[in-house]
Length: 445
Image (cartoon, rainbow, N blue to C red; front, top):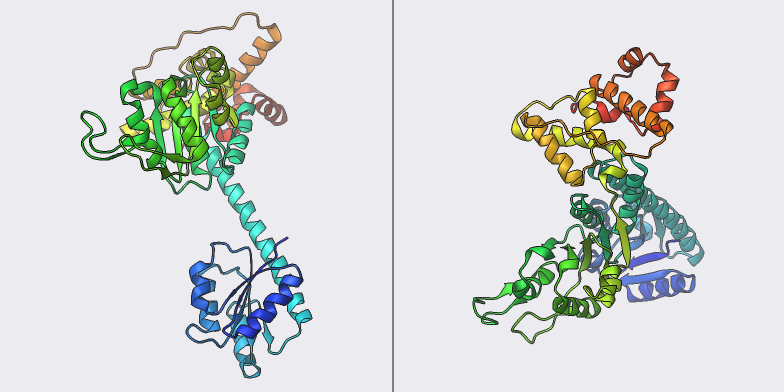
């Protein structure tokens, strides 16, 4: 339950008395003698109530109320008034004040009004939090596309981990979207306004790695002209994304571990220790602990990085998402290239669904762009061996439904007519195969 109260009054005796009453009643109290000082230190979305005198030197209580209303219209403000200020206080309530107390007032009345105001504040903040969560979920759904159960689990994990100050390891095959997931962990969390810095550990020569990561002072080594800020320092306050971290040289792993333990670094050629605040998100294909057991990665660093782990499913494990993803990439490519987005035939869709996509989402995006350019060729059919007849029938049924929905651009009535199915049967089959009408609508809808 919220219990924070700010008291603003120029009279020391009143401030001290109110602070004592409220503290003894279990409130967390902060006092100010001037409204200007309170405004300078007031945190965004203050989780409590403000109690303010009306008549004060400098900024008075009514002007203070007006400034607070502009910052946060839902912040409860209770005004303390003298007898002659009551009509003014009534007008202030019409202007947004929560309530007013006429001096002298009893502690019991003050406590009763404060508790009501805090209850209201708690409801407002909870409502804001739920709206923010819903908005974040909606934006994440539009970023990490897919209806497969594994994608739904992944989005839930990303939303939860984005709010936590922990390092994360993302495991996935080439082209499965590791950097996109890393960006989501950054963009949907409290570090979103700070830098997101990406570094591919496999793309940097070993002799340049330390300077790239830690930066250097002028003259630190041959060719080091001028001071250079390294990736770690540049990401201060934000997120450092280390892709293919299994390729990081062992010597640099030791130094990175020290930075993570101490939250400080030293540039090459410098003795000055610089404090930093960063979150590390590392991406890898192999298991880092397996790499450690093989002597290719430091075990202590692996544990330091792998506080939480996300596994990205390869595209062949979520084939139901292929039509949606292909359509998304094709529309984006068509808009970028000034072409018309292609409509796939049933045969073309079957080819897409049966291909293994070893390059995962990246390969699919390339295939969509080639289709827009008219350069695509039919993908070879790769039928999985060992499937039962029932499993093959299910797969063929899903292919037919996708093809019909794609042909008719999500027009359910047209699909019902073509496939000669009752509406309820079509709904059940679409639900079973993870098909949504929205996946097949034209981009304008």
